[in-house]
Image (tube, rainbow, N blue to C red):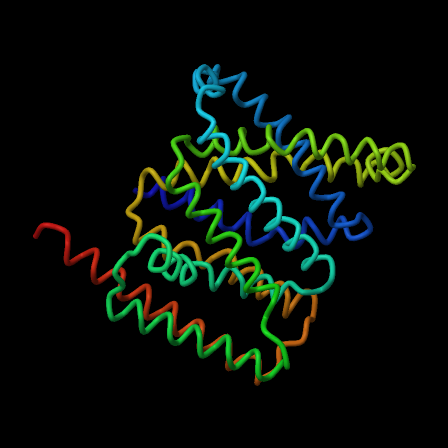
Length: 292
């Protein structure tokens, strides 16, 4: 239990510190960072699979077109989510990005209701209603919906829904997604290279090192998360997931000095209250189901 909490919390801390990494690549376009993230993630994951000799899942892969189609869809959603997140970080929208991951658990609940016909309990409805009030407030104050936050929450929520029903584990699933994305990433990077715009070729040693690091930086926290999730209850995991957006919010406000007015704070408070209601309701339901 203790090891599981440590592994999962460490993964969320790393994810929370992602803005520091992407800010260090501020001079590289978001799309190019995404392409290098796909490329070097695949290199790293193939290395891990080779060390572990974990290739058996590939044996009957070509005979399962539905599985491949499902992971092609999840790969597309993951790349969209990554692109929006990287763009937001490098355009001084760290606070907006943190909002997306605060809203993700509540979007998951709503997606379960709409797409899986899951019945929501009263506490879950209350949490969704409070979050909706927060989003409406932020929309009124800004004059437009929180597009970045909603886009990140919805894309990651649907991605999680697809992965929830997938037959592969975390390592194999991410490897298959990067296999699917690799041809597009390689082709586009080749085009950029021919045009003289590949930051890995023309960049400094520091930029090259940071782009190479995209592989382990992407894969290692995911592997820590997968190992931790197997050791702790879902209720505990659900509480730990707020570590990442909390760190991002603190970085956005205090390190990068992004605007965070009192009016905007009200919207965040509504969403935080929704998360508190959601967490308490989930814990109560979990303990109620456990044998005395």
